[in-house]
Length: 204
Image 1 (tube, helix red, strand yellow):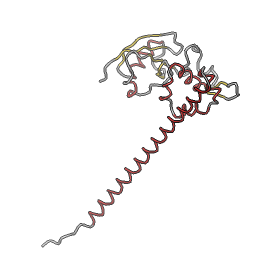
Image 2 (tube, one colour; image 1 turned 120 degrees about the vertical axis):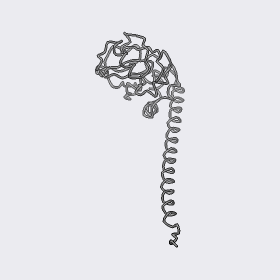
Image 3 (tube, one colour; image 1 turned 90 degrees about the horizontal axis):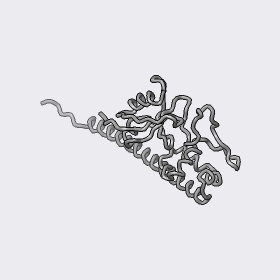
Image 4 (cartoon, rainbow, N blue to C red; image 1 turned 180 degrees about the horizontal axis):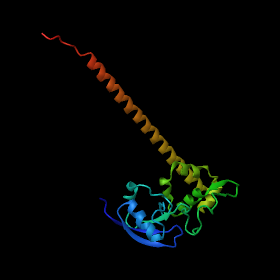
């Protein structure tokens, strides 16, 4: 059984902040809902308060350090950058428009805002999130980062390299799986052939 650890639990609008002890994700959900005033039967998402990353399995949960700040989100709530709390996901637009007229999803805006605090966060971006940053115009990305266009270009190049590396790794793993499967089938056929070609001796 996993060791119980302390965590900080916040409501989606950051108005309620509590401390709990939990040894599993289910236990954290159960205790957390009680702490922030949600009904026991209400389904919730558990996300990192700092960037909205969802915690949906115990494998990831077990790697979280003690006193990690987590947020519980009910069905009509979603994570927002600090300072934009207090509205449910139904009340917020799904995108914003840059000065060039390019539509940018709110998730991309929130992720890029997080990069201002720690640029290395892009390593944990999903492939779709990386592509979202790459697809932005350089001026729009620079504006969201509050930095120069040269820096925005460097960020996009880093995202592209990271995405390419993931693609290459995925393709290499696919080839290995194909090779492994082929070897297994080949060994099975050879085994059957060897068995059928063994000399049969008549009983004397």
